Length: 435
Image (cartoon, rainbow, N blue to C red; front, top):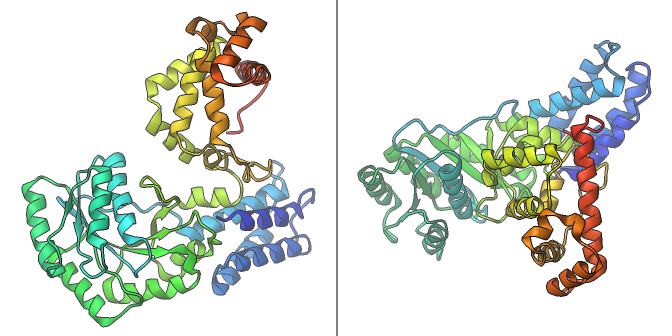
């Protein structure tokens, strides 16, 4: 997502590096590149036109100070305008009512049922909520079964009453939630292949009886600009409070994310970035703009790490690194924690300048990671704490025990020593982390 657009924007900004100042002449080519990048990413034409006009007007109206280079100033302007397009500020869910009721609506095939399970999982983990999912899609075959299966896999209760009227299901669900002290109710509603009057009437009835805090449209980002018509169609009838874009991990060009808020004034609250049940992320406009411009998304990395590594453990490991006592035992523990973060290439893509360094297309074979772990586990605890004692005979035993070659054992030890040198350089202030 956004990688092609980001590459084009990077190329555009390169054109004005080294210039003494920003002029209409030296940014004209950059503006053409940016315009093409946005249009090819399926951003709405009117949005592109306004974006280009705003950047150009602000760029030509600003003086380049001694502390800023023209390309740095231009990047800042482009980033600020992207943030503005994406909605400017993070818009959290309204969860102050007890119970807070969140109603998800959308067309058939948008991923609504899976998304409601992801959202329930997010609320439980990130907001410490006790969610109840309510199965109100009584028309699509196996929709109720699907939600119940998702509920079982997450250990989150699903309230269902079979194929009775959705309004009656919601009434009973609200009563049940209050009795069982659920603080959040998530209603999975029926979808259609297109917007029609019976669907809207049913959704309006549910809204009237439940008075939800949030009415959120789940929409497939791969729809492209048709998504704008769908959002407006639902919003005109239901007064949406936000939308969730799904399948942003697929082949979508991502342009719809840059058009939604500007054209509909409906905030993007979450994006689906994987098929896994933890693959739903709160939408932060500034973070997204920085990812588009290859500035990285360190906050998202930090949040992922916080979910896996406790603060005490992080402090302990940092002290070990700083003291120069970081050994293979520590490395093994860190390695196991990194594996819990998910595919490593997804983390690497969030680093600043990942595209520039060619890291956005990196593929890390899980088997290679398993081989590393096998080698370290074939060492004795003493050897892991004192890797300097690993001579030829020990290496042969470790290689045999792990089913790997002596060359692979040597390679791992060399990489470990290089990593320790880098840590020492960071500690001595000779090298800075990219963030």
